[in-house]
Every structure is written in C-alpha cells, then in structure tokens.
Length: 219
Figure 1: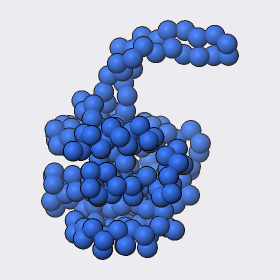
Figure 2: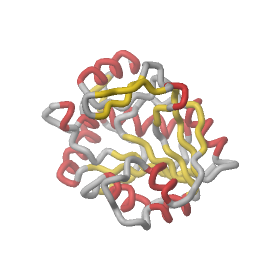
Figure 3: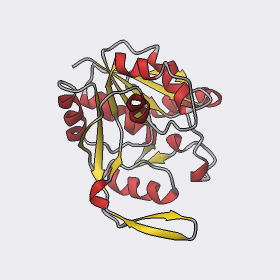
Figure 4: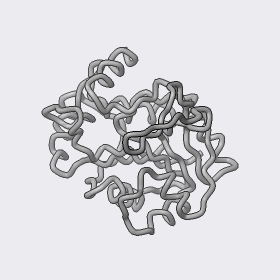
C-alpha cells in the first residue's frame, strides 16, 4: 500500500521542562524523533515520510542529522501556529492516497499495530488504534464526582490513518479550539472512525517519567 506519513513534531515540550523540545531529547542512544522516523521506514521503506518541526529549530535538526549521521529519507516542513496548521501544511506535500498522522514522540508503536491499521484501510476510510482503559474512571463536576463504566471507553493512540481525500476535506474546515485530534476533525465531517487494537507500549512521551519508561522499553 502506498503511504504518506506525517510525523508531527512541531511542539516545544513545555511539560518536559527541558532545555530543548522533547522530540530532540536522547533516548536509548539517539533523539526520540530519530527512533520514530526509523520505525516507519522499517515498516515500509517506500513510504513518504514528512516531519513537521518548529521553524526556529530547523537548523538544530540539521545539526542533529549531521552529528548522528542519520540517513533515513524524510522531508521537513516548518510547523504552523497549532498542530492543525502544521498538518494542513504537510498535507499539501503528501503524494500517496493513504495518509498516516503520527506523534513524533511516540517511538514505540509496534509493526503489528501499523499492519492492523493498513489492513483495516482496505475497508474503511478512517482508522485509529486504541487500547482499553485499565484504571477506574471518575467524572468530576464541581465538588462532586461519579464513577464511569471504563469498558465503554478507549485510549486513542496514533498513527491515525485516512484516505487522503477524506483528511483533505476535514482540513478544509476552519480551525477552532474544539479540535483534539485528526479523527475528531474527520468525524465532524461525517465520517465513520474504525477502531483497531493498538499496543500498550505506544506511549506519548510527555513527562520526565515517560522519558524514563521509553528509555527502558527501547533498550
């Protein structure tokens, strides 16, 4: 299957409280983003890989590539004001009929998860990996709370995968604060979202604790 992969890494990682954006932090011997790019290339070495980066960090990215002699083919696009704008810009460069959108700081998505997404795209226009909620949940409103039925909920992961035309139509909408991810945007456009099984290791590295966990898993 011909695939374009948009890897979003346009954030500055304020919750990590580091000197550099989290996607550039070293884990298991190389920057997180290198791991993420490499796993998609390993899964499909003909996939078009597009990476969105903060414009002010583009030269730093070139330095990292030279320092680590990173040679996995990819294209770089400057990120926009919000994730929405970064992906909308990247979509214009996508050449393939299928588009996967993945968080740059999720370097542990499994090849099995990727294959489940690809297989499902044979029958559906929009596919996302999810995992069950393992902890008890409570909804908080004011000073009160109530228990929720956790079996009715799923944790959403990436890559979120779409027919290119479906994603393009969704991103023709105007930006608003209610946009949480690509699937919700596509869903607002009337499309059905098909769920497939993700993998528990596919964490989004957001905090220092996540960094420690990713280090252990990648090693």
